Structure formats: C-alpha cells, structure tokens
Image (cartoon, rainbow, N blue to C red):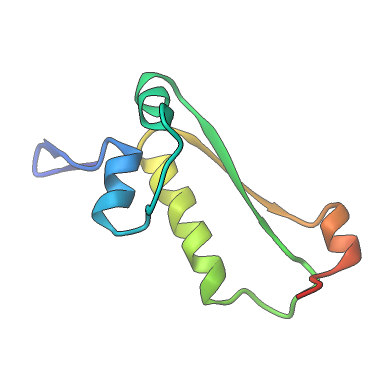
Length: 87
C-alpha cells in the first residue's frame, strides 16, 4: 500500500505482527511469502443465519493478504455446508 509516496505493510507477516494477530508461525513461512506469491482461503458456513465478529478476523486477514500481493479466496459451502456447523 502506498500512502504519500511511502510503501507500508508490504510484508504480510510484519503486518499481522504489528496488529497483534500472530502468536506463532511455522519456520520459513515469512521467507516464502516474501519470495513468491501465495494463496490462502477462509471458509464460511452457509447454514448460519449471518456472519459474526469471528468471521471478521478471517476476512481482515484475507484483505491484508491481498494488499501485500497474494491471492485470497473466500469459500462458502461445500461438503461442510451440507453437514452444518456442529459447534
């Protein structure tokens, strides 16, 4: 992201650390994400009545993933949707 001619948050892992969203990370993940474009997904249960605040965290992470040059995917449904949320 460029603001007033300066690049901010071009490192996905640094962005999440700055926001307090990372506790632990698999060794080598940051280096791979800096070297090449990655992809990530977050799945949502279509049997629920609506999205909730817990879903917002996944959505925010996908947005930051996209801003830093990666490919995000939001999934709704599939086999899990046929079963429903057991929690």
